[in-house]
Amino acid sequence: MRKTVSLFAFLVLSTIAYSQNPATADTSEVSYVVLKNATLIDAVSDTGKKGSLLIKGERIEALSYDRPITPPKGAVVYDLEGKYIIPGLIDAHVHITHGTLKEAQDQLQKALKAGITGVRDMGGDGRMLTLLQKNTKIGEDMGPDVFFSTIIAGPEFFAKDPRPQDVAKGAIAGQVPWVKAITDTTDLRQVIAEAKGLGATAIKVYLNIDKHLFKKVAAEAKRQHLKVWAHGVVPPTKPLDITKGGANVMSHAGSLIQYQMAKGPIKGRHDFESREKAAEWKAKLDAVKWDENTPEVVQLFEAMKKNHSILDATLFVYYYFKEDLKNMEEDALRQVDAFRAVTIAYDMGVKIGAGSDHMISEDGTLNLHTELKLLTTAGLSNIDALRAATIVNAEGLGEEKQIGTIESGKLANLVILNTDPLENIENTLDIKYVVKRGVIIP
Image 1 (cartoon, rainbow, N blue to C red):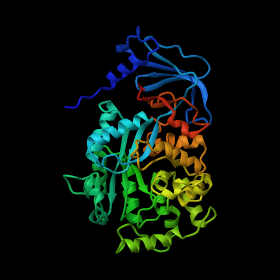
Image 2 (cartoon, one colour; image 1 turned 120 degrees about the vertical axis):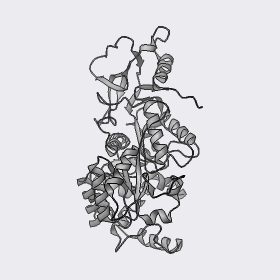
Image 3 (spheres, rainbow, N blue to C red; image 1 turned 180 degrees about the vertical axis):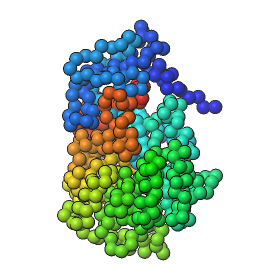
């Protein structure tokens, strides 16, 4: 049987190793940690400010900017002079269950050490996700907190796409709570109840759902206090109808505008006789011209702002999987459709979230950090790029009262950096420690 380390045991080990006075500290009774003399970038203010914070158990007990915090008896104190503290990062678009459980656990451990204290899984094996959600929360596994959606789509998707069966092994895709087929006659109340019972944070509406059914399933999800996540396009449903239908988060900036501007019904990947026909249709779609003054563009982003729909841009996947983009100068990259869409949405006041859709590259790189850099290329300020991966993503999860900023009463999910991310967003990679639910991870 694999040995695991409990949250309490891990806290003890961490405080023994990093107490300022390890020879005398009674770590078996430690419940307080003081982080002092750091610049706190709380994601509330636009700038950082030097101060200290007190952690009690897994939560932030107090913040102080004007005077030192007097450490409670038995507290472990870290003097972080010259360091910077940001909220723990959240990758809002991952898929972690397409391998074995051990592989998923290893990925999550790597993610946590890279400053990612929360992940939003956008459709996987619900059985594995439920286990990982529990284990990372209580410390049986070392990793970010796991939030996940079930996938809801029309029967055609499950009949034609092999991917859902990959996460339904031992069952039938479309007939289990985490990958569920629905039609106009489906008992939506039961479908949502099963998703909620599994531990899902949200439903993800995928393909072959028209705008009327989308609105019905979104309304039922919200009635049962689940979030509604979707791609920006759910053929045959266009982006404008996705936001009006109740989507809390809409994923993928690429081709978002073109699909909105398409004449007639829009098609999904399985709606063509051949790959050639699909490529021909997509080429025509990509040839559509638009800018920030195009009526459909203005209408869509005004609606997203009004409806508080977050744009989960996933710029990384457009960049990473197209070799020609990797060699582009920033000015040229900004003209790529996905980047232009993010620029316009951001300028119009749409909230932008940060998700990689490819959490770890083959070389071990945690790609959320690259996503933050790409968001700044698209025009986000460094602080708003940080917000995209913290408070905005927390809002998309419905967890903004618990995580996403450095405030008293919130979970102590933090990243301690050696250098200033407001000066250079790539400094989010320069990590000294990560703090997950009050546990210091070197």
